[in-house]
Image (cartoon, rainbow, N blue to C red):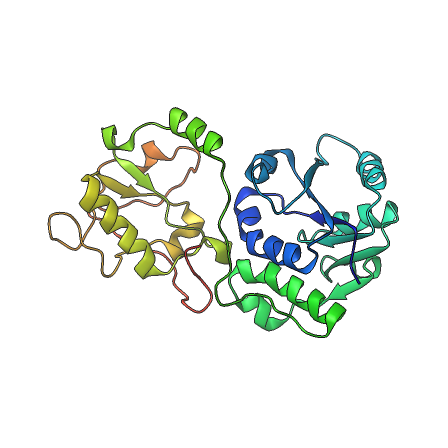
Length: 283
């Protein structure tokens, strides 16, 4: 079945939205002639301004507008199908209230009864990097519609298209990091999401490169709940002076005041992100 007007409910946050890019490309492959509208929060919209993956953007913010306002926007779009990358109940409820005929997504958040095509989140999917979570939805949909799937799991394309004009505008605003006189804070990841956990080898290689190419003073910061994935002593990291530790040149309490109760760091703290090579990659 080929959809003509397709709504894709995107995720709410910038990092999660980046993780949907390969899945968006697969949807464009699967429905090459469909008019694809991407529904996102306003603060995510600029991320997709230059992408050919969506024909247009539909902005919706339930903090600023009512549920009925969202329903009216969907009705105006005259969509014949909606695919939900967002796992929330509201995403399916909006599409159901707008009478979109096909409503496709994972059976999460108690919304199975609102979906016409409900797919399971398998244990294998939960073990994978978050990028593959969205790819699995497209793969299950393609298999359901065609009996097979050709989703690219080996080399997923997560590139974000940026126009030359947008790049020039960014360069004009961005300071020249080569002239930075202050220490550079590095935030190595977070424990609450697989998407935020890099393999140790990739992370330490980045630190080594920053130190070798720019001779910047580096230090690491993390909220106390992320200490399990930012533990002291990154193995394999080589400091510029040949030692195996990274100097911490600033008291952490002064450099991350928005996170009170930060753990103390020693004078030669090193950090190691939680590493699960089979399920985490530095996308």
